[in-house]
Structures are given as C-alpha cells and as structure tokens.
Image 1 (tube, chains in turn yellow, orange):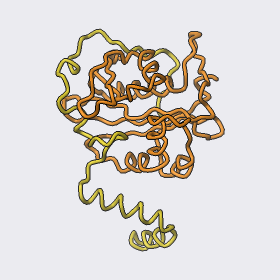
Image 2 (image 1 turned 120 degrees about the horizontal axis):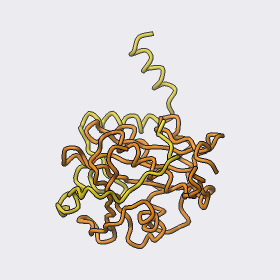
Image 3 (image 1 turned 180 degrees about the horizontal axis):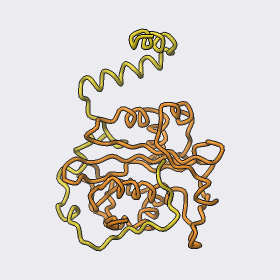
Image 4 (image 1 turned 120 degrees about the vertical axis):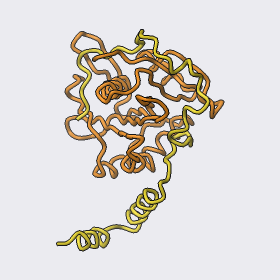
Length: 73
Length: 174
C-alpha cells in the first residue's frame, strides 16, 4: 500500500470531528502557527518583559529531587 | 501508593479519548480552565508542538492504565539553554488526596510527583537551571505545591494581573 493509499484509508475511517482536528493540525503546522498556553499567551512570549533577575542563576538550588521520583518513559 | 505504581510516560494520540473525559475540577475558575484545556485542545497542541518549543505532555497512570495525573511543559526559547516552563499539572478528581510513599519515608502528593518528574526530565534535557510556572493568584492549592517543591520566588506576571509566576532553581548534575 502506498503512503497516499494509506492516508486515504485513514481519512475514510475518521469521524467528522477527527477529520476537523486533523485538518486544523495540518493547517496550523503549514502556517507555522504559534501555540498558546492555557492562559492564552503565545509560547515563546511568556517571558516577555521578565525581570532579568528571575533568570540569574544563583548556584543555590531551591529544588531538590528526592530518590524514587520516576523517570519519564 | 508506591512510586512504581504510577507510570509516567509521554502522551500519545491513543490517549486522546481518555483525556477527553479527564476530570480535575471542582468548579473553581482556575480548575475549570485547566480541565477544559485537558479535555480539549491542550493534548493536540502538545502532540503538534513545533520543535523549537520541545513541548512534552506527560501522563501518570495507575497499573490498570487509568490516568491519574497530567503534566505539560515546554521551553520558552529566549535563552541558551532554554527556560523550562511547566504549563500544567493536574490531578484527576478520583486520585486527589492520594499520597506516594518515597523510599526515604517521605510522602508526597501526586501533583508533587508529576512536578518533580518534570523537573527530572528537564535536567536530563539540559534545560536552564532556572524554571518557572504560572499560577492563578487565588489558587492556594497550587501555590502550596509550589512552596513544597521549591518554586518559591513570586514575581508578577507581565501578561495578567490574575496570575503570578513561581520560579525556582534546579539542582545541578542530578
């Protein structure tokens, strides 16, 4: 089966909603659309105007990762 | 609950039907926003993440495959190395209040487990030592979680008066 035939089969099995989602994903990727976070801020713009102090590494970690925290599989 | 009873793995398209029914809100506005996003566009956004943002959405399931916790993080590509931004951590209503017993006797919540797993992944990916989240300033539950994991600095958010940012610093070489 060629790639085109495989795609045609997948598309034919989609519901209207799934097809709409797929179309939106392809259209977004083609357009280079920038996602937004859950608060509506564009990814890559969240730190606009951030205080440079927030980005400065102090060398004193505030976060500790205890033993037993699983790795992502 | 033991840590190995929670499998934390990357989101796949096969998870979309289960996430469409995911419930984590008891009605608070900040919980409603997150639940709507998880049940709607958030997973697809992460599945289609442009490479420059390296979006990663994670699911923690019980041994039977039921989703207990969800997390999502990506990079804000403004620095080298890039800053890790944890966009979402959500615990399912059915699992809320569950504790995970670590080997050293400490008990942590599922939300804490997911956040720490995200930080561990950030370390393995070589993210900037500084990392942050955004939290609705009324969301005391999430602010307390931030305190517990070391996201203790609280600058205002430049985009919304309703939000604060919580910043912390990752350990090195873990």
